[in-house]
Image (cartoon, rainbow, N blue to C red):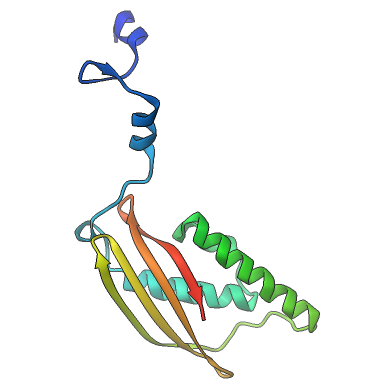
Length: 147
């Protein structure tokens, strides 16, 4: 690279890149559904991870790569409450017995999947609602509701 080109910096169509252009370029990029894998394996794995986190046998940080920051903070808060409830009643963390009854999902928009997962446990049946968004050529949970 010449000394002149190095001193000018990045250019786009004869203009310098602004800070906004650079931020948009490096920001998470939405991905269309056609370029994304089947969401069902992620939905099943995320459900298993969430159940195990709530039971106290898995660290919530292991799920961070599959979630947006807001979804992760919501789950981390819920796991913290479950941990405090277990310690208040002096119960140990035990791997739960469960089975995934059904996984239903639909695509309300391109690059978005909303799912409802029914999980059967010995004491009760739980439902998880998860919204996945295609970002940077992979699915990430942008919202998680544990019902």
